[in-house]
Each structure stands twice: as structure tokens, then as C-alpha cells.
Length: 107
Ligand SMILES: [Zn+2]
Image 1 (cartoon, protein in one colour):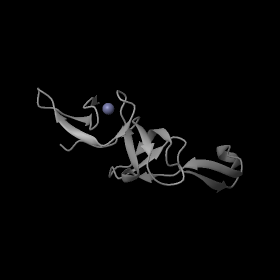
Image 2 (tube, protein in one colour; image 1 turned 180 degrees about the vertical axis):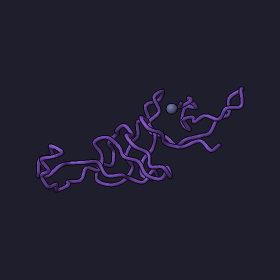
Image 3 (cartoon, protein in one colour; image 1 turned 120 degrees about the horizontal axis):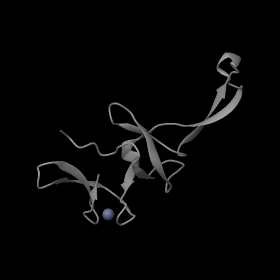
């Protein structure tokens, strides 16, 4: 089984785009694993129509848009740096993600 590079709840650093340099928590990884939605990152304004049945007020709502995973890098909890992922095989044969900079395992 390939190890997914980015998982839900990972902390990621934004490499490109208007939010470059910020970090945020991954809220959604799309099923193909190619795009992620990061909390507070890539905010877009959506114009919504009021819908009283669903208790939605009209107006402008800010919402996160997805970004491609090549534009984010995971933040290692150990060395606090953003890093590329190394694959590490544990003694029990299980593959896990690891920090390329310090070697710390990222579950
Ligand atoms: Zn590290």
C-alpha cells in the first residue's frame, strides 16, 4: 500500500500562492489524494442566495478552496520545519512517513 503523503489533520506549510509561508491544518483530502483543503488558506468569496428553509442568509461567505498537494509541505512536529516526506519501514514491516530533515516518524 502506498503511503499517502498528506493526511487529514496534518499541519502543512503553504509553498505557493497568495498564502505562501502560512501554515494550517488539513481539513479535507480529496479521494484521489491530489488536492487538499487547508483551514484558513486559499479563502475565496462565495456569493450565496438566501434560503430561509435551510436558514442560510444571503451575502458573501468566505470559504476555503482546495489546493494541489504539490503546493504544500508537511510540517514536522519534531523539528518544526516543513519537509519532504521520506518513507520508513518499521521493524514490523509497516510503512510510515518520516521527516526528511530529522528522520522523525510522522504518523
Ligand atoms: Zn523533522
